[in-house]
Amino acid sequence: MMFNIFFYHSAVLAPFVFFSSIITFRRWFFPDIFLRRIFLALVAGASIFSAYFWSVTPLSPNYKINDFVPSEHAQKMNEIKKIIPADASLSVQHNLGPHFSQRKEIFRFPIARDEAEYILLDESNPFSANPRQLFGFEYALQMKPLEWQNDIEELKKSEKYDLIYDQDEYLLFRRKK
Image 1: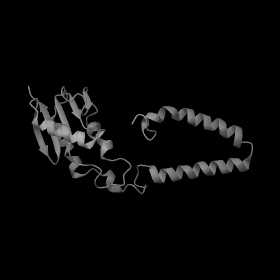
Image 2: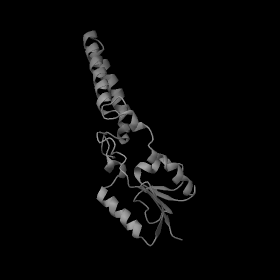
Image 3: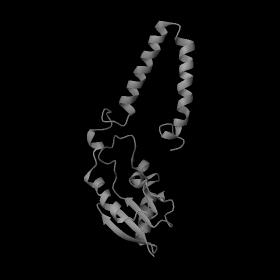
Image 4: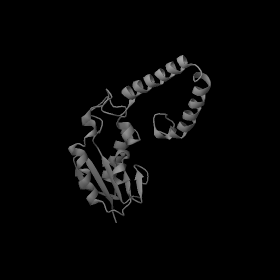
């Protein structure tokens, strides 16, 4: 993610691109009204084109309004949040992390896999309903699916963790005392 310009890590460059484009516009296009209008039309056209094809909105052909409505599966997260104590350390699958962002100790699975008090994983593919999405299951995992599946099997057999919640493809493990 850190090396791909489609993620937020490249946002640091945005002010430099923005201000250099203003300076370029002023030097090259501002004196001539015809060139100014062509430049502005190209910027507007490129903005509309990229917003239509690459935005993550219901207006894009890759998404529909149902992609933005929490499913019954996603609503189970409220039930799971009640099980995990607020002060407990948690290793959680990348796409589930935002549900627990207020915690003092939260790690992206498999980081701190052996130290975390709780581990939360979701075996379902959140992208299966819409395969045209720009991001896929591997993006949600931030690891290879086969490696992730092997980690789940290891946890199920682990002497360190108990599986305390196994419903609707959510798996919640608690470290044994």
